[in-house]
Every structure is written in structure tokens, then in C-alpha cells.
Figure 1 (cartoon, rainbow, N blue to C red):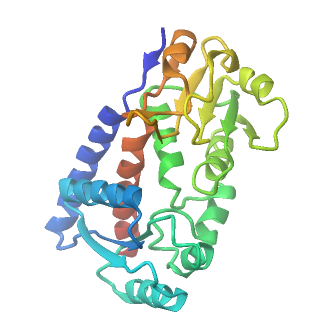
Figure 2 (figure 1 turned 180 degrees about the vertical axis):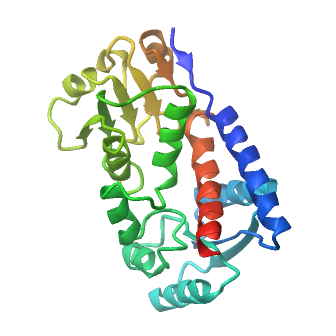
Length: 281
């Protein structure tokens, strides 16, 4: 039976540690501040930014949100980003995705000052990660690396298979794992024999976004299984990409959904805001 990796608990410990750092900064007269931009009224995005606001409050990071109308133009969005870039009180800028289809999200990410890019999506930070340099790493991949660390899971020399190649999770996660000397394979919609490839993984990470798509016949005995998926069934139940009941019989470690990777994403965002503040002073 797999050991369950408790992301909630590790995220809580991370926030407690960050709160001490923030208190220390405040004693020097510095308060870290995050600005969040959301365009339109995507319901899932509303939930995410509410969670971010609550987490900021918990660790003492100031929080400012800019909710823009769904008909906002590209120029209006970029003008707001530039205004926040130039505001010395703002240490981190986060652009909540998805954006309405008429807006160019890549241009928006590139407009954010890379020193305030706490989501790690600016090409400068993506490039620095690829070169193994210190940078802002996307929050979900860095949260996963933190889960490995907290559970003494050494990925050096291990076969890591990642299902999904998004710019938010899959691609940066490849670099994070390579930087820790893992052997990495990435599978996506055009990959043939995904089951066979997945079965060779010492560490299997799924970030596809399809409920229960990873079944026990895709998992090697005693593999570590990390489930990034968050899917809502018609019943309203939240499940991951991995069939948890089956997989937990076979894996050595597994993350639950909810309560696994999700809480770590927000914790690592706060970590990046504190890091950005320290670098800027």
C-alpha cells in the first residue's frame, strides 16, 4: 500500500517558514506585495485567486487584485502590466490564465518584468531554468520538487515519465528533473504506446487533465506517482488523472487529489514573491 504524500501538510510548513521570513522583512520596514491580474469572469480562476489572496494574508504578504472586463483590449492589459512593472511597491505580478481568446497571453507574459515574474513564465526565466541557473520556477513544478525533497525521494538517476507537455507544468518540470540528474521522458497526445512508456517509470507524473486516465496497468510496482490533474466529475466529486484506489495498491508513494500537488502550487507562489522581494532590495 502506497504512502500518501500529504501536500496540505507540507504546504502548511512552507507557509509557516515563509511567514517568519516575511516578519523579518517587516521588521526592516519591507512588506512583500503581490499584484494579481484576472481578465473576465472564469469561475475556476475566481476560486484560484481567492485561494491566493487567503494564502497571502496568512503569511503577511500584501495582495492587490485587478479584475478586468472580458472585453479588455491587449493594449489595456499591457498598459496595466507596465504600470505594475514601474510600481516599486509591487514585488510580484501574476497574470491568471486562461485569458479571453482575443488576448495574446504570451505577449502579456513577456511584458511582465522578469524580476517580478513570480509565475516563472517569462522567456528569461524559462531560459535560465533550462541553463540550470537560479530563477523563478513555475509554481506547480517547483511544488512537486518540494514534495520529493520533503519525503526524501531522490530522483537522481531515476526514470521519470511525465504525461503532458504544457508550458505551465510539463515543460518546466522536464528541466527541474534534469537539473536533479533524472532521466526524463515526456509523453503527449501524439506519443505512441504511452502505457508501455509509463510502465518503465520509477516516478510517474501525470498532468493531462482527464479523470482516472492513469490505471494500475500503467504503473510499475513501487513507482512514485504524482497526480497533477484536477478534474470535476458530473457528481461534483474532484478527482485526479490517476485512478487512486488502483494505483495506491501498486505505488510506493502517491499524491491524493485534492490535497496533494494543489496546495503546493500556492505555497511556491508565495515563496517566489518573498524571493523576488529579497532580490529587489
